[in-house]
Amino acid sequence: MSGSGSININEFLLDKTDNERINWLCGFLNALIKIHSYHNFDSLLVRIVDYKQYLLEPYQEVADSRKKKHEATDISEHLFRLYPRYDRYLPEAWNKSLITQKKHCIDFNKCKKNIFHLRKAREKSLHRCIENNETFSTNKSWSHFQVIRKGKYQDILESLLKEPNQLMHRSELIGHCAATTISLMTLPDGKKVVVKRYNSKSKLYSLTRSIIDSRAKVCWKGAELLNWLGIKSPVPLAMLEQRSGPWIHTSYLITEFIPGVTLSEYFEEQPKNEYWSSVRREVEDFLLTFPEVLVAHGDFKSTNFMVENHKTLMIDLDSMKSFRFKKLFIRSYLRDIDRFERNWVNSDQAKPFFQPIIDKVRNTLI
Image (cartoon, rainbow, N blue to C red; front, side, top):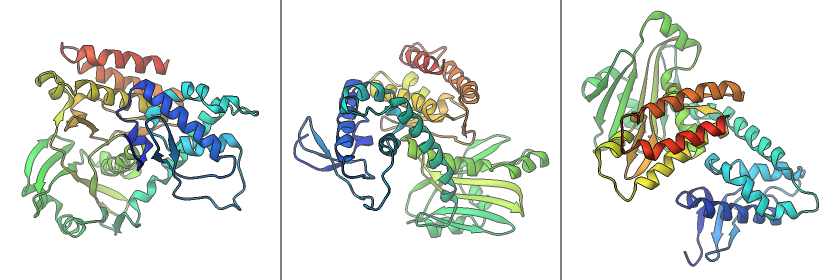
């Protein structure tokens, strides 16, 4: 990589080895220490100088009048924007960096605690993804609540949501059970979208889902949260709740269609290929991300991991839950890991790939 150009360090580190990630994070920390002596910046953009060095390239400078905070908090404000998958490299990068050579050494544990609280504080802003703003358009009445992602398909989606059941009847049925009905629909320009209806099992169930978020809304917020965490999932395009005031009858979710295969199909039915290691590493990154932020997916069956063009995505987010307390999270997440392990019990090809990851995750939870 020669020359210069702006990149996002989160994306830049995705395909790097463990040692490369540690070395680059060490350099990133050193750069932060240097600029913190006279400025604060809100950016993770870096400018490549050569193979071994890079410079921070700020895009928004904080006003000089801003009251300077404690250094640990300042560093935390930058590090919490890193994907949590890199947290496991921070202790070694921290020890190698100039931070440990400063006259007033910054306490790593305090910084790590600040990072966690900043991420949890950001979760509170998830309500913005169901409000009118530059990205989303909402419409609320006694009979419905809907959110549509602004853009090319906004008008089409608004029209489709007026008669969602007719929309599904005109679509290709690809899944059905008591809880959900899933259809695949082709839009006028050829783009395919997935339409998912969350069926009401009973009046008591509808009442329960009226007190808490509907499953469609949980998925909608979950996709936004995963995006912040660096975990890819199909982009949600529209959401609809059919209501009678506060009572939710049925909810719908429309997402982009990902023409991939499930994780089990990728590792069990396809011949071993050069991309297996990179997909395995991405799954490892995903599974080690959740403990850093105390968020549980809720269902780690292999069909909820999709592989498209050798890149991994997560789907079916309606059981996602965020925790404030580690003990409660661990109890829930161990069930996720147990479910993930059961995927490979009878798979001679996949089990050797994933068992070390499963063991590593369990060790982090102890």
